Image (tube, rainbow, N blue to C red; front, side, top):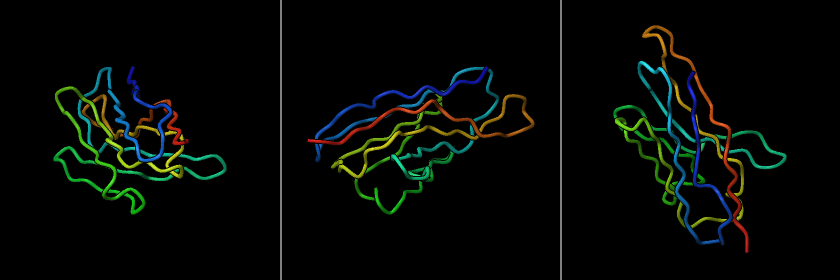
Length: 120
């Protein structure tokens, strides 16, 4: 029943900006930490940023100062504002959420991924 739907990916020139969003839907009791991960061709998936329910954030060194993660708990949505984009940011970006559907077990859910391409 739970679904994470990402949006906002696309093609952008170096130095440009994109804002990704990920909305959680379904019978969710509580959402804990949410985050963004990315996977470039030929590379393993890596953490980009995470944010706790209370708003505590964590960023990969490669995106600090350029990306900003935020969330709207009422809308059950997490955002990733990406500025000063570089070609090396090109990847499929995945939304992650640790959540419970039964007030008991907390499990990780993943979105389907959205492509971000930074190119001239």
